[in-house]
Image (tube, rainbow, N blue to C red; front, side, top):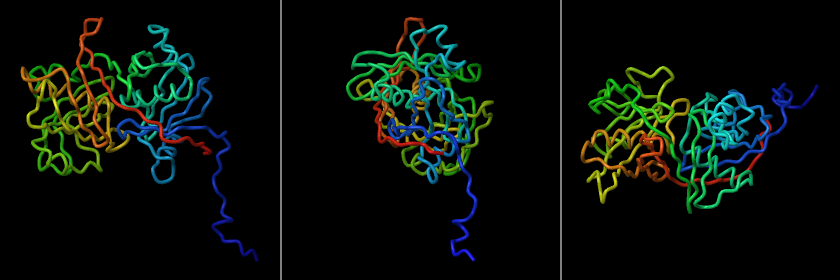
Length: 316
C-alpha cells in the first residue's frame, strides 16, 4: 500500500501553454498585470485573465493589460486607419476577464511600461499616441508622471441631463435611501453620486455592486463623491471619491472615474465651477483639466503618477 498522501496522488489540472513574462504596476493604487506581446501571440483569454487577477490564487490585480502592436488586432487596425502613428494598442481586460473600453490609470501605467521596457522612447515633455478600444489617446510624459488627453466627454443621457441635475438613482449599502446621480461617458460609462459629507463617503460599503436605475446596457462604474469646503480653492476644485468598478469591485483609484467626477461636479457647481480639479482617491491624488482642443470640442486631460512594482512569470 502506498503511504503517499491521497492529496499528493490526486490528479491535478495542468496548463501546457508556454509561460509568459509579466510586470505588476499601479497608478494611484489602481493595479495591473502587464504583458508585452508585440506580435500578438500571448494567450490571455477571459478565463486566464481572471485567474491571474485573482488576489488569493493569482498575482492579484484590478485588470490585465496586454501591450500589442495595433496591426495585430482588428480594433487596433481601426485606430491605425485614422492615427497611423498609434503603433501600440492597450488591450485591456477587467479583473473578471471581461473586456473594457478604457482605463485612465491603466493608460499611464501602460505607457510607463512601454518606456521602462525599452519598447518606446519618450523623454519628459514628449508625447505618444496609443490605441485603445475607446480610440486613440495622446499621452505626454512629465517629471513624475503622465498626462492623457482623454478626448471629449459626454452625458450618457443628454436629454435627461440638460439641467445638470440627474438621470439615474443609485442605492448602495451605507446609504439609507436611493440618491440621484449623473451618468457620464469618457469612452466607458460612469454614474456619479454626490454625497453630503466626507463621513458619509467613508461609511459606504462597496463590497457589493451598487444598484443603478436605470442601468446602462453594458453596466457602469459608480463613483461616490464628497466636496471639500470650500469646493473651489484658488481656482481649483477639490473633491474626494470612492468607486465601484464594473467587473472588478471597489478599487483604490479610477482615472476615467475621476474625470467623470470632475465633469459632474463642474456641472452641479454651475457658474461657481472650475476647469481644474484635484480628485482624491484612496490611492492618491489625480489632476483633471478641461481644455478646448484643436477639433473644437472640449477635452478632459487626466494627470497622475505611474509605477512598476515587480516582474514575474505566468506559468498557468
